[in-house]
Amino acid sequence: MGDKATSIDAYLDGIDPAFRAELERIRALVTRLVPSVEETISYRMPTLTYKGRALVFFTASKKHMSFYPSSWAIEELKDRLSD
Image 1 (tube, rainbow, N blue to C red):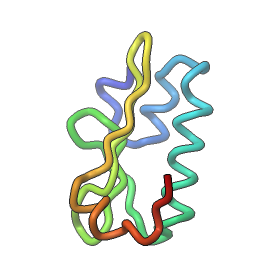
Image 2: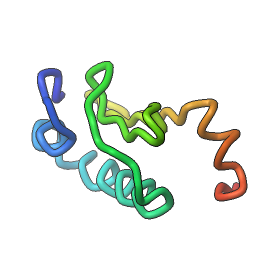
Image 3: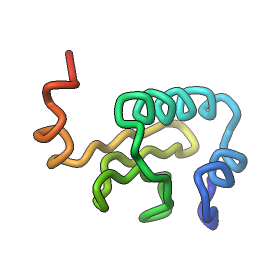
């Protein structure tokens, strides 16, 4: 599941194709909302950073996907978020 990936693309290449489309959608959505994000791998998860801090993490396991927004990101970008 992308344990040794060094980029988001490499991570996505190693996961179940059933999850890849949704993770790509999340990646594109966050990038569209915050165009200046940078991509990295942190804690073995694809991570999008903003202003030098982790903005969101997303990952896939054998039976589920996870999305982890940073608490500071929710507070700072709340005007861009909706239900």
